[in-house]
Length: 102
Image (tube, rainbow, N blue to C red):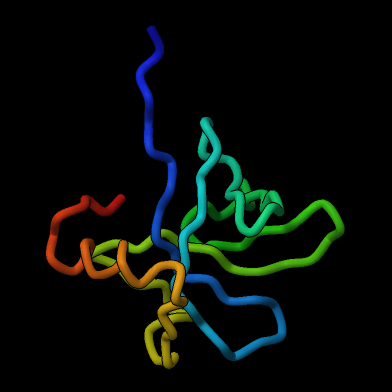
């Protein structure tokens, strides 16, 4: 029987051309090569995995980076980060250390 894995993560998200950075829930693919966010597949850049650069099938770009207790991506450090309503409950669990970070 296959082990059920929760692939949902809290992540920093910054759409291209926007100064807004927010935290929302994304789902990571089995091989960790892409994220699924709001029904769109965002492929991670293979060249610099830590940068968070992602592209959708239409060529749109954004930055997606999973929350981590030890590292914040440079593009989110000085930004005002907004917690999306859909992520607030999970974010509060993460803050209280009741769920692990990547």
